[in-house]
Length: 237
Image (tube, rainbow, N blue to C red):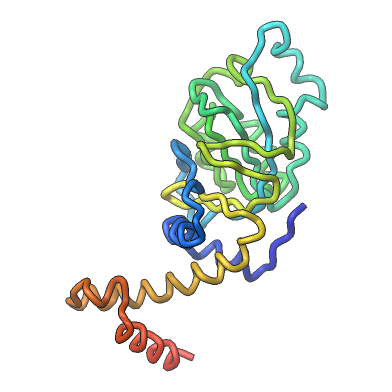
């Protein structure tokens, strides 16, 4: 499992996915924001954690039966029971949102086990009680039909696609009110530090804009604005 320094995780909990996409864009990474995946509830803080992945393929009627859930090795059930605490379960549903990738009992079990969150580009059933959980859940929307209607869970901890974005086990997953960003594991530390500093500067710039400053030279900041910001930062210690 990928372990991230506490400072990296703390910074990721402070910064927005908008800032992260900009930092990743500067490194040539454009496809990092999951499409069609939104927070199910209203959460007070960012969802942050390494990815634990689950892959689905299309269901087949002779294999996908309700009695299969009794098998503890069923990949969906096993993923709920083995996602490590502090990790985010990321489920590849191929963008098929008209069936659920989980329900209240599974999401409650995941939360009780200490998962940092769950992300799916499929649907979620029992959406109202799940939205009330403290554990963040991101999905493509509510869907009452059970997963077996369209999904066959196959394997865990393999590279997947979710919301049109490649997700590798251990990638850092960050979610806020806008949605979910995937940060490659090897870039997470430097992206966290850069994004944290960018947000400090932008908060300062926003104050100037509110005071009537014009955009040219202020945003993006020119050399004079950067010097003024550096002086302010020095005063702040």
